[in-house]
Length: 68
Image 1 (cartoon, rainbow, N blue to C red):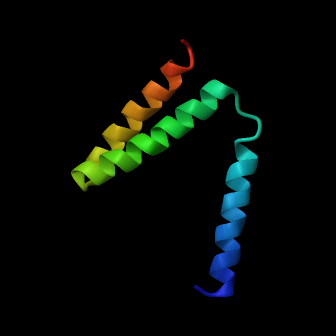
Image 2 (image 1 turned 90 degrees about the horizontal axis):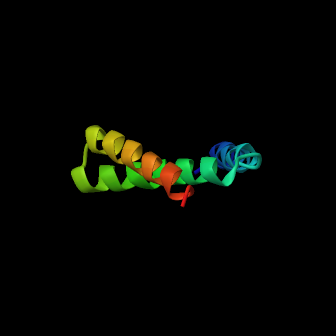
């Protein structure tokens, strides 16, 4: 990986963390749930449809879990 790609990757990581700084706990849980669900769905099914369904289910669970 050359220096330019490393710099771009680091910039994306910093911007991602900065974008999450103002989130409420429920919003953060929703995003984390969607990300984990999408990764799990893609790993289990091996296709985009599984990632979409997993992301939607994970986001819903992450959103609702903070209410209780």
